[in-house]
Structure formats: structure tokens, C-alpha cells
Length: 132
Image (tube, rainbow, N blue to C red):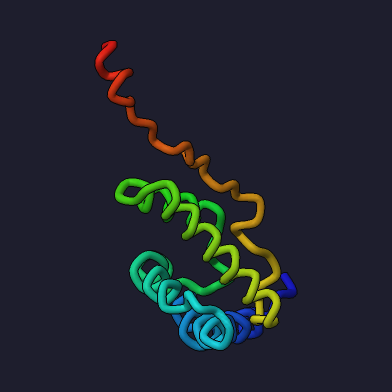
């Protein structure tokens, strides 16, 4: 068909895995300027690497993102899920910005944040409680 399979294999070997990218590019980049880089390291280790660590960076799809967040949502609050989405957006942004080979699109682009209920909890006053 005219495709060079050896060339495709060479290109695939050049694309880093998610785990390699996190440790060789993302975390060193964030350590230089981001105060919350330790938090990022924990989120990446506990929630991203366990799902995608061995996947090549260019193989992560929106479907993978949906599965990761669905599992994350089972045990975490909405705010935590939104933090993970934002972190993943930034990770893929950095991969494109730094010119990681084979990365041309961000799979988190257009993925909406979950709606959070940020209304403060209201308690009844003593007078209101007596009326009830």
C-alpha cells in the first residue's frame, strides 16, 4: 500500500509513554515554577499512571479520559475530578508546547468540567428551629 512499516515502528518508539513523559518532562517543568508540583506528582502517580502509565502519549483518547474520570468519580468528589481534568489538560498542553513527537492534539480539549455545588451550607437559626 506504499506505507513504510519500519518507519511507523521507529516513530512509535520515539513517542514517550505517559509515565515517561510525566517523569522526564512534565514534573521537571512544573518543579521550576509551580508551588503545587508535589500535589501534581501525587495525582499523577495515584490516578494517571495507574491507568495510562504504559500507554504511549499519542494513544490516549477521549474514551480513555471518560473511563478514567468515571472510575475516579466513584470514589472522589466533583472538585477532585475537576482538578484531575485540569491537570490532564495542562499535561497534554505541555506535551504539545514542548513538541513531543507524535503529539498533535489534546484529548482533553472540549471536555467540560463537572458542575460543582458551591453554595454555602445554611443552618437554621435558633428562632427558625423553634418554629419547626
